[in-house]
Image 1 (cartoon, rainbow, N blue to C red):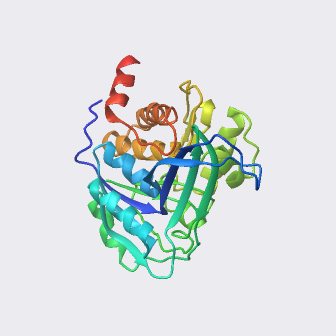
Image 2: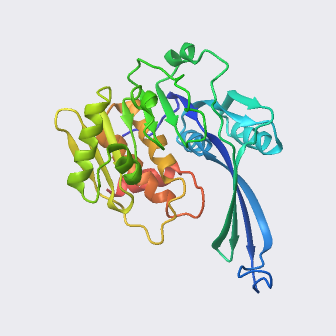
Image 3: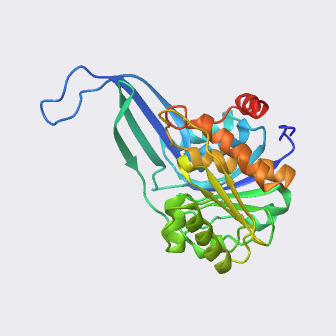
Length: 306
């Protein structure tokens, strides 16, 4: 497969946030509580949530435009700056007064995460532009739901066959407008109300949801260390084996899966190839610490080894 996605245009809609990492060391415990006293050595910022999807997409070489909202604060300005430096189109991201940018601050001590501080405020958001006019200009539309407010109101509607959803919850109005959905096992369990402790149950749960949402062409069930299962129409089922990774860090792995799968599918319309490539990319990301993005050269090398 030719991994050149420079002609793929992606419209990414979702909950944008910022990940702030504080990395330090500790030689003593606090006398005030049973926690380490951390001396910061470095810190860095990475787009999170839909922002991480955008970063993965641009690493794949795709052209990305974003729709969402952030707060009118310093963290929001930093998030926009990072996205723009990576040639990501942010003109449709709305800046809202009196609303904080969703921020996740992770504190590491001696390579171990010891605390996380979240700043967030749900908002029942509706875009201030006619997004339907944009749809025809993109090869694929990605909905990145982190349950922070972008999809609370039923504003998204599309009759296109190029909508791929990474869900947090079963929100009917976005599930019914998607062609492919990529839940993890917990999301699949909650959405289907079925215990998905084995592959047969995973397939059954996907069938229940495809019966409820007949617009769906495929459900791509992410099973963590158990790999990925694809369920489609006409009794289509494919189990993608996992890649073994020592001491995996799964932060942002789902973002990698939907980003890579979406651009490959937009180019090839081959669901098995798309998910297999995404699975390879995710195995690279979970082998790194924190919110990481994929590396196209590493993906190429792993594909060549197969």
